[in-house]
Amino acid sequence: MSSKKLVYLIISAIIFVICAYICISSAPRYEKSSYNSQKVYPSIIDDINNISEITFNTGVETFSILHEQDDWVVKEKKNYFANGERVRRLLLGIAEMEYIEPKTKNKERYSEIGVNDPLNDKHNRSREIVMKDKNGKSIVSFITSGSLLNLYNVGTGTYLRKSNDEQSWLVKTGMDASGDMESWVLQPIINLSPKQIKNIKISSKNKVILDASRDTTEENIITKVGKPAQTEKALSSLSNLRFIDIDKKEKAKAIIEGKSPETIEISTFSGMMIEMEIYNLTTEFNLIISVSADRLPEKTVTNAVEKLNKIYNDWIYTLSINDGLNLTSK
Image (tube, rainbow, N blue to C red; front, side, top):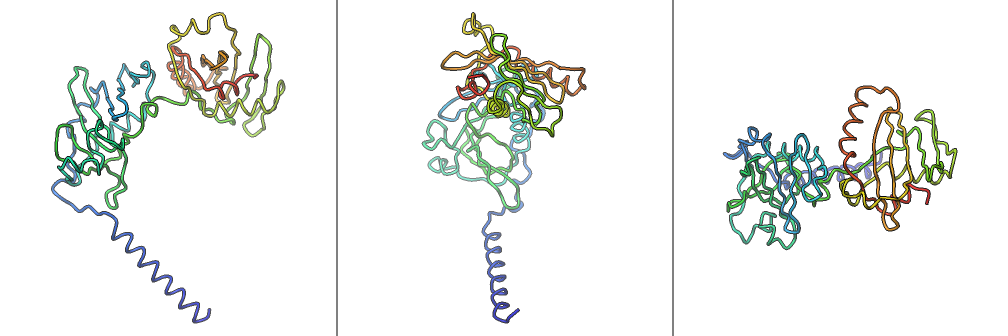
């Protein structure tokens, strides 16, 4: 290596070290203080199983997630299932939330960190979260920006102000309180990767119009009846099938009464059989789903079947036109 190249390498290394030092030294550091490790809601661990309602006010919308028996449901979504795992992470994030340092008490500066009243937030950054027990008593009530910050030597955190309190805080938490109502609804309806599907059959007016299958997950699926392109479209939709609206089956009976559905039968390599009825209503598609076992399955599959039927049994789903078309012969 020439001396000239060696000099260039040394200079480059020095510049890299300096840049790294600047980045690290300029990142926010939070030293130990009298507030560190103090829980924001120290008693919530004792109350967490008594929480029956979580209300979000974003300034744009207000919605509530209710605890009914063993499930969380979205009140404004006709009490359809909420994303229970996301609710669990929210509760855990609040239970583990710790003070880092106090921030502003100045109401004029609340908007800078997203802790102003959501109704007065021009940028729709802040949201108020209120949690109540079965008797309607408030257990948790605070305003936050909802977004997480990466804090250099702490982890993640956010800005928070307890409702009716002037003092705002930077807190340590992994709590994800972001998103609108739709982001808290349990989606998708079905999430099957193409490799999970052993057989798919679509029938219309008692006639099979699509039939495709394979013997192992390593094989390409073979279309026996219909067109391969339609098989691919159907498999693609089933990998992330989402609804745009839902209703109780009992209330929706009048919509589909007298109409003949196309039926879709799907068997998976895990041993599940998914049966779907899809109604083409010109401007939209309605879907009814049930799940069973196509052979004597393992206990894990039985549990999965029971869990899915608990979700599907009482509901009829409205699909987008594209998803509806992809699941039919049209």
